[in-house]
Length: 141
Image (cartoon, rainbow, N blue to C red; front, side, top):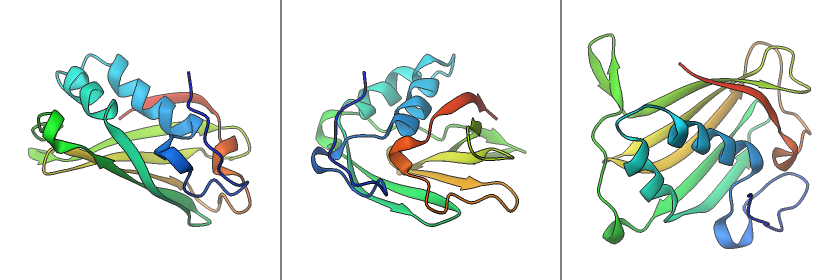
């Protein structure tokens, strides 16, 4: 189900652009949702490649590249307090983190571009391996 990568223990960029297990779980949550964008998002994910990944100590940032010639852009995901947003936001429970993780998937110009995660409160990822993060629950908020 998850692509094999070759990342080091810190979860930095992998050859071949594979997602970590947590990243794949976030993507799958959108694809399984009742969002009108689920099918279009799945088409983009099929063409996605990780180009960069950074453990910031309090979270992570993963940059995605999409072959735009082979998929259509998505319109803004949904209205938030009357404004359109290009961010899909999650609350994620992770073993080893007291308060969980705020995660988001960003679109730019209608294309899947980034996955970010940040631990709540004084928790941090510190030396936790990004490859080892496993979600016990994921909620789209």
